Length: 136
Length: 426
Image 1 (cartoon, rainbow over the protein chains, first blue to last red):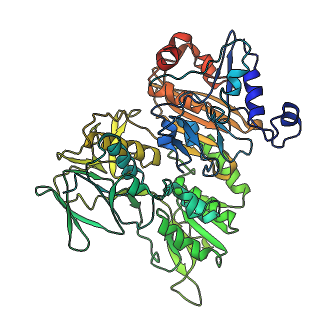
Image 2 (cartoon, one colour):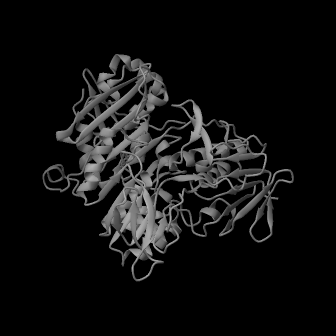
Image 3 (tube, chains in turn purple, brown):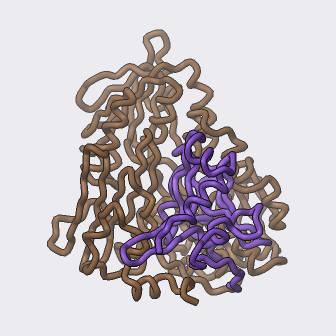
């Protein structure tokens, strides 16, 4: 239904304060959402990093910031190592990688490492987002 | 005897090691590399100059990469020649390494035209870490530089020098900078940003000769352009481009054109000999032919494909194409495939240019399939367009929407999404 709550909760979850009002009104730069709401009326859905098995962003990364975690299968991104060259943005077939708020590095879904269920899924009022393990 | 021998330890070599180890955990791997240092990102050498990164940040693999992958690393060593009948690589100290499978991933070297005075102290090329370190050592005392070549390397080194406070003159033989990857409009948008940063751009020109300082003719003091104009400078950086390093295979049966010829498995014409990266001419899916594409992500991918095949797992290289993501002078740009289509009715270019937003989008079509993408400033959906391009999708029904601010995955018809992203509908 395109409510955009996934983006709101993602933004809050990746803010410093973890508080919706502070995150939107006080934090500078304002944290960005790592999930993208794709809308082309009447179609709408949320898209975030798919943590691809054969991740093009990992092979393309110039600095080694983007890595595939062999144990968890997650595609991890090290902001400290990232040089913001935008090569991963160029190759991601989902368009799921964004420039971060600083404009000097990229930002993408980390599946809310510290939560049991990612914030976008937990707060999707319509059950459109589902979190489950799929065998490659 | 080592099962796998890899010459070169940059993007393609690293990719190959990782792929081999995915398939074969025990076969011995020997890597020969001239560079004694750990794996680092070549495209980041300009960040070393600008101060944006130190070597620690440039490392693109962890410190135990060789050990972790159980590789015998012969670093700081040079592979001199190949003996293909006895299957060995001769090394610089008179020793040699036998191989069952060989990967030539020797990369590229800077192209240096004949320029009078190019042997003077203060003339640099800009390809390796050691080039960058030599240049970095001279920057403190330098006030100005002339950069020859306004391609990717030239623009990146220019930006780094500007950040270090140098006055830079960029000299480019073509009429436009970055002319191989950008069309005139996009090129001009970058040019404006570069000029704003105080750089002088001289196009349609090159350097006649490098001249010395009055007090010491051996030290760079200036450069004379083809127009006759003389530019004072303390440094000259030759950044015209790279050419494949094919010395190792020259005189052998390995077939070469401008680079080493490979098939889609990264095999050369000689059995058990593979090539990948800047030294190889691999498949370009836009042009439908093999050609040189010296780009880091492609080198890594080609190395990976070679590694799989060397280890016995069939893998196809689906082909790459010219693709560059730029961050220079604060203007994000992505350019994929054809930027300047030939004046030919077969090509159609659709364009959206909004100078007030500094926004430019251009898509080049051939038979209603995307063969070129240029995005300036709003680049985040580039990957979707690239995916459409790689899959040769007929975009006739929604081609104008490709230029829209709102273009996204949802723009694609449902049936097409199902086809292009099958994993999402399992």
